[in-house]
Amino acid sequence: MLSKPSMRPLWFILLGFLIVACGGAAESPISFTETPLPPSSTATLTPVPATQTPTIPADTPMPTIKFTAIDTLPPTPSPTSTELPAGYRIVPDVVGLHYLEARHVLYAAGFTFLYSDVFDLDQPFGTILEQYPGAGTAEKTGKTIFLYRAFQAPGMWVGDKCRQLLITTTSGKLLFGVYLREGNLYEIKTDFQYGWTSIFDYRMVLLDEFNNHEEDQLVFEPEWTAWYVLSLGPYEVSQNELDKYPDGVPSGCLWVYLLEE
Image 1 (cartoon, one colour):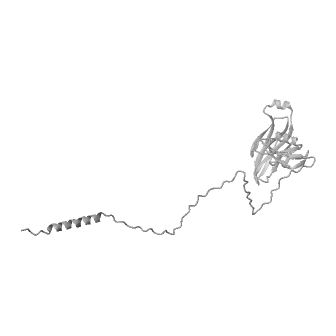
Image 2 (image 1 turned 90 degrees about the horizontal axis):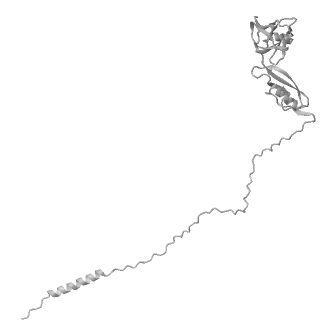
Image 3 (image 1 turned 60 degrees about the vertical axis):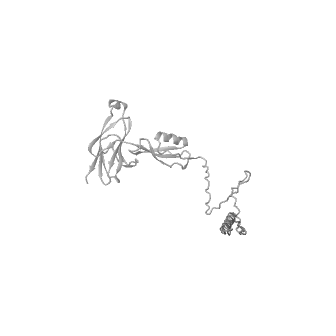
C-alpha cells in the first residue's frame, strides 16, 4: 500500500523561494531623484581694482599754488647811502684804543684832537675812555676831536704822614690820587717850592689850588665821595741835579689832614 505523500518537503521548498526573493530585493539599489533648486537672486560682487598712484609725465608742468597773506606787512625800505657833503668825514671810533693808536686813526681820517687825562685805576695808562664828538657822526675835515685818556698816579694817604716828593725828570708835574669822603673837611699842605698845588676831580676838572710861592695850604670840602687828583708843579730842574740824585731829587712833603669840625 502506497503511503500518502507528506506535505513537509513542499513547505520547505516554498520557504526557500521566499528567502531568495527577499535577499534579491535587499541587494537592489534604491535610486533617489534630485530636484535642482531654482537659482538664487544673490547679486554677483565685482572686485574693485586697487587704487594706483597716477604718474605725472616728466614734461608735465607742476601746478603753481598761490597763498594769500591775511596780514601783509609793508616792505622794509632798503637803506640808502647818503653821500656826505664835500669836506665832511665820518668820525672813527677810538674808545678803548691806546692813545698812540687813537692818534694815528684820527690823523688818517682827517681830524685833529686834544686830550685830557682822567684818573682811572681800572684801565691801563693811555687808554681812551671817551671821545667827543662820538663815533659815526659826520664832521668837517680838520675838526678837533676831544679825547679822555686814562692815567694812574701813586696813592696819597690821609693823615699826618709825609708823602715824600721826588723829582725824576727835568720838567713836569707830580700827580697823586687821594680818596676823600663827602661832608668831611680836609687840609692839603705842602712845602713844595715849584708852581702850584691843585686839586682836581677824576676828570681833571680844577676844583681848587694855591700858589706854592705864596701859600702852603688850603681847606677842601668834597661834594661827593670819590678819588681826587693832587697836582704839584709845573717844575723845572737841571740835568745836573738829576744826576746827583739817581732815585729822584728830594723836593719836600705833601700832607692831607682830616679836620675835625
